[in-house]
Length: 244
Ligand code: GLP
View 1 (cartoon, rainbow, N blue to C red):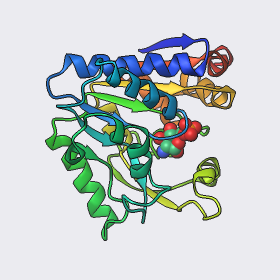
View 2 (cartoon, protein in one colour):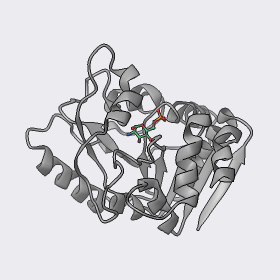
View 3 (tube, rainbow, N blue to C red):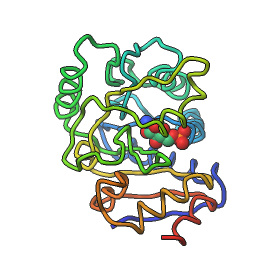
């Protein structure tokens, strides 16, 4: 059962998602957040930082796990997701850096790193609230179409479409071919999931996610199996619901 919230514009949708994160932080003594990257998340994190500055989002006891990281990319790489998270959130709130986690893209043995990451999430007690964006091809994290719903954290190969969608952050360098991502089962194991999707470009993927078959061809459709899933949209993205 998916709860759907539609706001008029992208900023309103991001604010609504940020408020859910702040509520989660306030309601749990040791919150564990699953975090996402992507352009859609930037306004969400801006709102979250503003809530923190207003005294309404306390990260003092929080632990975070990001969905994914490019393979071969170390924490200091400017186009990597670790740098994205520092710039958008970590550097602006009272999160202990030692409790922020991303897959180590530059680990010498990436498969072992993926297994270690999955175990680390379990050791933290699992994810309480998982934030998600939506790929235009229906991917979540870097779980591309065809990903097994039983998949856990692992090394994946990116599709050409995903590499193109993320090319701007990398130009003029090519986007890496592979990544480490939480699996679909890892995501579905979170106590609650919140997806933020905004803009007309996401409408077709939303139509497939909400109205098509629950099947590997659209990884985001797996979220319809989650017992506590909230989908937050702006009006443009929500046009995909009508098409579903
Ligand atoms: C990347 C991330 C996804 C994210 C997607 C959408 O591929 N791995 O987690 O959902 O981008 O990004 P954007 O918000 O930029 O459209």
